[in-house]
Image 1 (cartoon, rainbow, N blue to C red):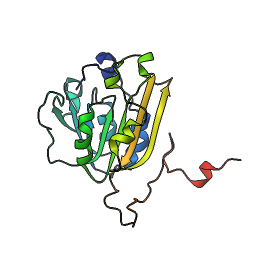
Image 2: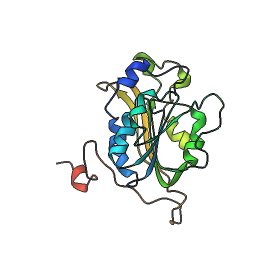
Image 3: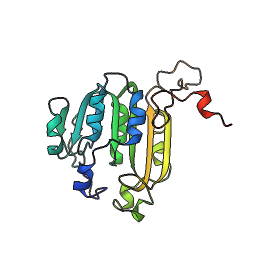
Length: 216
C-alpha cells in the first residue's frame, strides 16, 4: 500500500531484495514458527526472510503482484488500508508484526491490539530530515523525534530504539526504528515492569554478553 507521498520511486522500492538489518537483527525475538504480519510488504523482501526462518507469514499490500511468487508459502492479501475500508485482519493476532518504509499513524492502535502476548513489533520508517535526501518530503509522512516511542506509549516493552542518518544504506536517509514486545500486561512484577529480553548486536547470532560490552 502506498501513501500519498510514497517513500521512494515504487520501482526502486520493489527492486530491493535484502531485508533491513534492523528486521534481521530482531526477528530472532519472534517465537519460533509464529504467525507474522508483513504490513506494506512491497516486493516481499521481509516476507521471504521471515519464511526462511520458519514463520507463518501474512503479507499485505495495496498491490501484490510483486509477491505473487510466494503465494504458495505465505498468505498474500491485497488491501488498501487508507481508503476507509475495514481492517482486513479483524480478530487475528500475530506473534510478530513487521513494518518498513510505511507510515499511517491511525494503524498503531490496531497493530498493538493485533499482537499476541509476547508478540514482537519491528517498525522502521523515515523521519524528519529525510527531505534533504529524497522522498518522502511531506512532514505528514515523516516521524518526529521520539514519535515511535510516543505512539507505543506504555503498552509495549521497548527492546531497542534508534533515530538517525543512514548514509550507506540502500535507501540513504533519516530513519527511526523500534523493536518492542507485548509483555507488559502479563508482567507478574509489582511495578508492572516486564522481564528484559536478550539483546542481539548487529551481525551476531547470539545475545550480547557481558564480555561484549567491556572496554579494555
